[in-house]
Length: 321
Image (cartoon, rainbow, N blue to C red; front, side, top):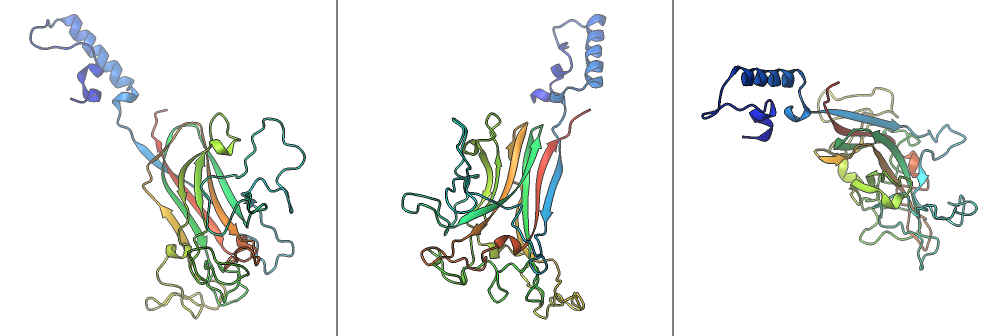
């Protein structure tokens, strides 16, 4: 018999052959049962969870109309940049202060090389958008979903096209100055959008080397994760996979929802109590020089090419008030 279902979980009085049965013992046993029912202990209840979803997203500036454009909230991943603009450290670093050469772990991709003895300044860089969460109680990470929303309308100057030039296929190593990363050819699908979810160390949350990476998806083909295997109609007014087809009428630069969706469920990853959890998406910015790697379809401003939507799902234990 399972421990949680044992009668001794309610009362210590046990009645069986060879023991005495009297009013005092019966009264005590019934009192124990009454108290146990009125004040149910945690060990006597079945563990139940409820799903909670945390959502975030934003649309970048429209480059077509904005005169003062910026890349925020994307920040550089490299934190040891000594030359160029801006540098990572101004003045002197405090003695014994943690210094993180990189803000994240497990984000290496082909074509982006950190500073080293052979390449002093490094090649290219990555830019990250992060969202932070705090859980006072233990939770279970169930799912992570990241949507890159693309607009495939007819207007060549439309926002969120997924590519620096509408004549260049989105998310491919096509065009630019420099080499193609090893193992790929011009026109190959890119594999340069890491997604990292880590938990900061409770004792030293400011030290990135102490974080625990709980979930990561790196070096995966972006074009292998389209929201639908059927692309929008080339006429730029809707979908033609059924009749009558969906139509956006005269709004030729607005299309049905389409893009790339990275979704992973049933992760079953436990997150400890008082955890500071961070979800990061990293964009590549290739150096695009003759001695480096070409920027492909990303161009020099990759943060403008898609709108973003992220959702994480956690399971929280049902608790009594």
